[in-house]
Amino acid sequence: MKLEDYIRDIPDFPKEGILFKDITPLLADANAFRLAITKLANEIDDCTATKIIGIESRGFVFGAALALELGYGFAPIRKKGKLPYDTVSYEYALEYGTDHVEMHVDAVEPGESVLVIDDLLATGGTVAAATHLIESVGGHVEAVAVLIELAFLGGRKKLGSHRFHTVLSYD
Image (tube, rainbow, N blue to C red; front, top):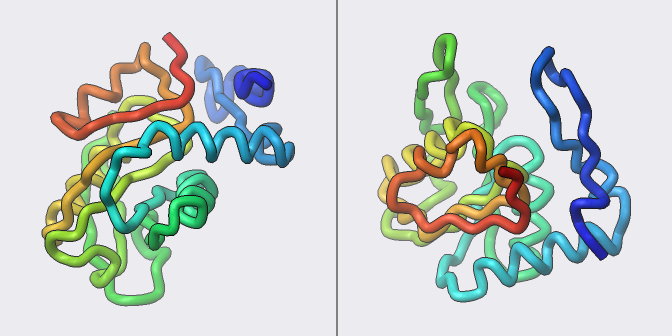
């Protein structure tokens, strides 16, 4: 089974000139989804983290399933204003303007080692912001893992020295 066969290309979404990698066919097939989680688990099998941090929104799907598979805790990072409890926030630059990510104040303990999980790494801005947010409360980002990397966009550079793992890479 090739995971690439379960990722659909959608031209000009969400705007003209973007080729969107649609993972919904992969999620709809139990065997493909299981294989994706297994491959992600294999990528990070040497990690000693105790928690997975999933980035909104598709990072929740992969992060929660991976946390269950590995016996880790799970916590979400969301866009500003989406979490119900006290939060910490990190503002980061976009191509035009800024955005914010947030997590609950008690999502990561000082010194706790975590894995950051998302479905896709493109330009790297949101994943880099998530790592900054975690580190701002004293957490340690042991590694970042994604199902898909759009390597041609260079997002890996924004992760600095953080270990990075991917299952599929598009050049």
